[in-house]
Length: 522
Image (cartoon, rainbow, N blue to C red; front, side, top):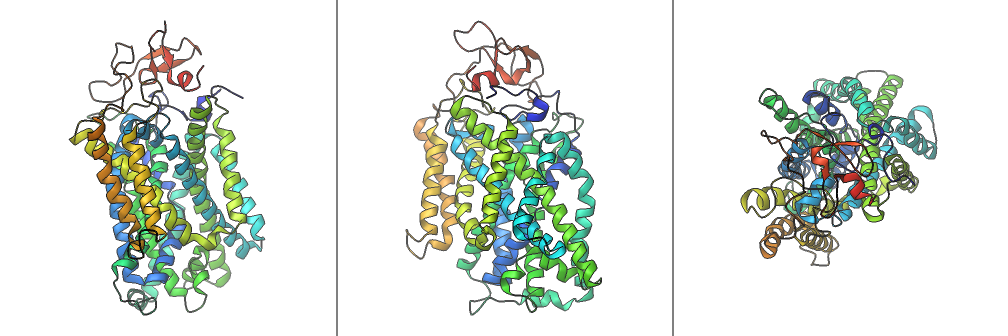
């Protein structure tokens, strides 16, 4: 076992702050890299599933409601990740959960990554089965093995991959839809008029059931922050471009996500007369139907498979990358040992492969509807702590803290709020709180998390956020513009050099120690 990373450029600063010396990308490159990670095709399946289950108008309202909430809650998280150059797990530690308390949310986020890896891998396998007659089990294996060499080198390789593939991906995704609307304009009105069974065109219960599925994507903000943490310092010169990048690649991802869900609903209803409802939710079938209105069948199949493969690679390198960060964070905190990020790349992929072989695609709606309760509770709790407890109540420290020794092991503010909101919303989802409340489980999670988080901060008077106020070093951690400060310090334990936000001088210790050695109990 390795107690610390041998090469941080491979480990991509898994457990700590991303230093200035490594962050050489422009805001635009970081934004394009982050947005490349939302190329997933699961959105098309999600939108199709909601529309076929509840009708088009209910689906559009569900998608709009979920997108609005995801944008609002994602904004403060994206800002903190980009401003202070830390991932969502490190943000969560200081935003109400404590050093060990956030292990629970790390596992939840890791679950998000392998669930969506499995969904995207299943979609790719469907495409390979149609295009190359490859058995599904072999397609699952191929989609898993394909991403390993790309994920190994972290941000350096992923930034190039996402920038190079994004133009082709956009053309293949948007082009056939625009052609279809021009070629058959009546298809748009048929889509808007589509109903599912005898239910009314607009039903609040149906809207909330659909929103519950769409809100499962709330955890995506964690993957966006895994890239946004590499943003350069915000200065007067780059202020406008910096904010544009954060808004677009942070909460702004959901605008494209909502568009993809609406397109998925449109394409599913367009091909519904030729395929079964289950098949209509498969993105490869949707795009074969769209491409075939413009090109011969063999070419339509080829283009659809190319789109599926590009999309799967773009998103699943992100799923594998972010999952490895989450698992490594949780494992290192619980054991004090650092086996290396690449070990957990393989762990995450193994779990995802098992889910694919178990045909989890057939249970997509149920899985996402259940999972969304946990994702909503976590993200709303952290967002509320930042906006209300930090900026309004001033009970939570404004500047994020993630270093072991500076934090209490557990902070009841976030942990109690998360457990209560997720527990009650899951109970509502399964009908334990009565059949009338079942469709509104997302609202239960939102209301409880948003209300209980500030209440817990008031009751505890904010005393569980910081274990101590000073880290024993005279130089401030943040410069005059609020960015993490420069300045190098040598760790007396490992002998390596770290920047100011990453070090502390523990009480009773003669020298400065890096956060990594403190985390691994060296």
